[in-house]
Image 1 (cartoon, rainbow, N blue to C red):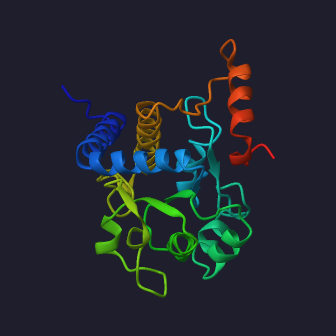
Image 2 (image 1 turned 90 degrees about the horizontal axis):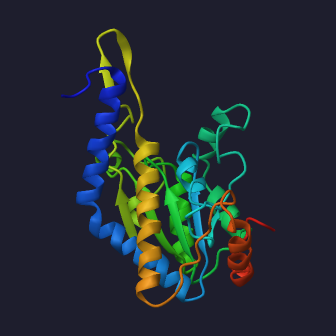
Length: 251
């Protein structure tokens, strides 16, 4: 018997979306995990980028217990969260042409690396140019986005293209345009966004796939352990010493 409270409806909606990405994006998740594993084996580095609330899912896989130690955050000042004042500045910066090129020019990204770009709409200049410029550098790009936006909205980039058009692999979050799962007659706007839940699940599923792929090839995955379990700090120290030249969040 389903729970028809708003809380129950939201959780049911999130579960439905998670089931969809599990079933419909399985091949893409497998390919994305294999790409990350290939990058690790090839001596490359891993990066994740997201603007605004999309940055939450990027940050969730960086320096994370149970996650890959090699995943680094590609940060763009002013757009990595809502801590910038005013918060609306981050949204404005996403639409600035040329910003992505400046960021990449001053970043450690290089040929042979992999970059995961998270953007729900995929329509703003920053994620589109980030993908275009990264691929021009020889970086493999995984896009995590809602493909629905490409058919129901217009691109804000001069090319008229979306993030999904410039990726080696695309993971479709299935989130509806507007990112709100609930409506009520008594509430004038749709509410209850699920993009963070689903996008974070996609990121963790991809990471888990990469770890298993490395193990299948006889390589111990460079995973971090919780610092709150006995031996966790020692374990992490060993991993970071081994892969220190590919870890940038501790410098």
